[in-house]
Image 1 (cartoon, rainbow over the protein chains, first blue to last red):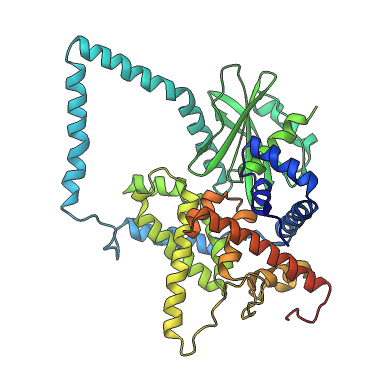
Image 2 (image 1 turned 30 degrees about the vertical axis):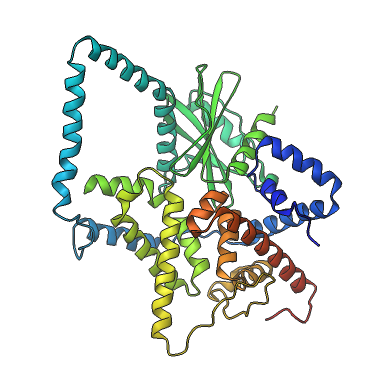
Length: 264
Length: 181
């Protein structure tokens, strides 16, 4: 009764296959009525769930309780498990020290040391091109999720959000509402990224917040990546760099990116 | 200690809402969800060093799920009558033994209520993968990490839960006698 390709079609639907497999599956679906129907069903179940399930987050009272018990825990009240066994502590403290001394004595070791230092420097520089910017964006994203940090200008109207940036950020990014595609514009914020006042457009997708950062730049962008569970998608349009960051699925995040790039 | 607390707050606490949502779907009473989340956050904080920059959300949700099972087992042991067990049957004839919290029912729409009731009637494994995929938007690897099963199992559970929810929904809206109230 069910096509043997059903699980692959589902994986395609969930954005879990690479481009080559996706093309294969699309060809298959063209000829397989069963899998076409399956795709429709999957879409329907998803739409119904995302529309019908409430997204309420942790109530304020629970949040307060959690913070309180963390206070107690951090103060060591009623806490036996948290303290590491005494015997492991000196070891943990010593290990990095020893490694540190070894490193410096090698560097001091003359020409060989200089070559090694150069190698180490090269090694340090390369990841740096990706590292700090992505780190900066993820921290800014996480900061924005704390209560009352998310939005400076609350509006679902792009004609309100876009002009607001004129006085508060160094760039004027694409602002649009894609409510019908599940991405609701909820406001804007100014944030500091790459030494600039970056414009952040804030969208909501189900329970997820998506921050779209934008700043002026012409240098190479990092490639798309995931840090601590947050996906980051980078792209440029004209001389503006963009980064969309969220804990949505990749598929959903890239869906928003596609929509934004299509805005004339 | 202060530094650990600050890192914990910035890496793990942003996922408190997701933890609560999952707990609400796992537990039948809202108060139980609060307890599970509370316990999970404490356990996460104590074991925070184990996280080491990996996926904090998947990690926290794994702990939430484990805390729920521990609590449920304790409750079961205390109860004089054992709780009805959810079955892993694919087609959703599982007994509807519970309903979602009634306290806020009046403000939710009919459709939402129906959907939540149908979701509650799915076996836990199926409900969880659906929620993690469709609401929390996690990928297969993350869901596999949270539910501690291979990716292949995630895929088949997803397929079965989606099919079950669809057929339950059809039964419901077409008013077939099998629909349970």
